[in-house]
Image 1 (tube, rainbow, N blue to C red):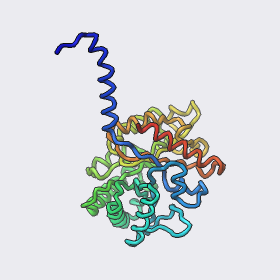
Image 2: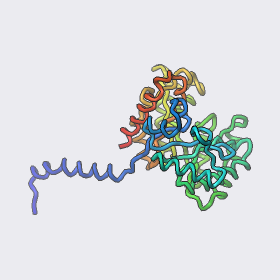
Image 3: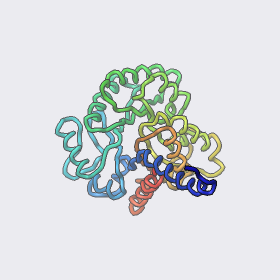
Image 4: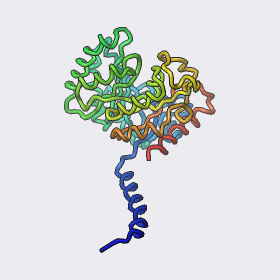
Length: 315
């Protein structure tokens, strides 16, 4: 069978459209949601109605160092992972609400108490595995020692954590947080030296910008870490135009300029594209740290708009 040039040109758009549809179908849908801390300011009677109100499909859930779950508010019972019954109750309530936990969030202190954190995080990873949770957000931050002095101890602790949680496929995501996590000269060597696919990054999209990196550098850093990202905090800042492409002091005027993700400087269509380019298949999780300072009447609508934007961009 032969084709004329005209028939080939007529068929080409159909073929390209089919290829685009097949590619889109092959890419997994990134679930959208928020941190559990974003639900309390909404004033809903419980965390599940709050999550449904804002359209959250997934939640990042905070776990304290006694295996409590302090930020999932419920009028009848506190949640805890201490006992098998507690784990079963939380799992049942998640199923009833039609919501999944995309990641546990741990405020770890590997600089101050590495042995405790290794044991605690390994035990929590076992619980996460049992509950079908694929990621844990951890901190690897030093506020006292400079990065050059801290990194050896951090590498040793994380290697021990990986070894102590063998048999689990839960991945630990070091947040780009504080003076060390936002410094690529610390973060990337940390990942390379630990050398495990189970250690990655919880990408906080706003923290690189908060740290002082110019906006163009923020996108470069997101592209660099994208292949290692296991979980996200979607956050934005809206700086004055003259401050966007200059190196600013760490944390400069953050409380004044933090913004919902649909209103800040960081282009989330570009962020999602960069994540997709790195092979990311995890969640898109809103962290709006200014939510509680908004008028109560604006909190839910703000969070609804943020999660709706992520759902639109994930396609």
